Length: 116
Image (cartoon, rainbow, N blue to C red; front, side):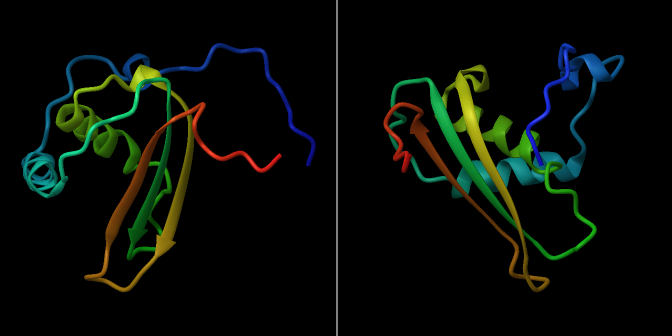
């Protein structure tokens, strides 16, 4: 399929919902666990390329649902702004229940390997 371009301003998540959104107890527990499990490391300078792989056990899980909560927690842990992410790759892998996972890479967009 040829790449298609549509002349329209993309709608942000913030523009899509009215009013304040509140974190659920499940989100708060997820955030707490992730903040404990994420290992400290020094981020490269922006702009960023990120790669996220979500191992999910339900074939009904949307590939994009885990991105925003996970990315917001990464920002909190590593003190960066997601406005500095210029490029990303996201993958969803089906795994057995109990074997769910998340893996990620954060690199300077100019330092990553480009085969072409």
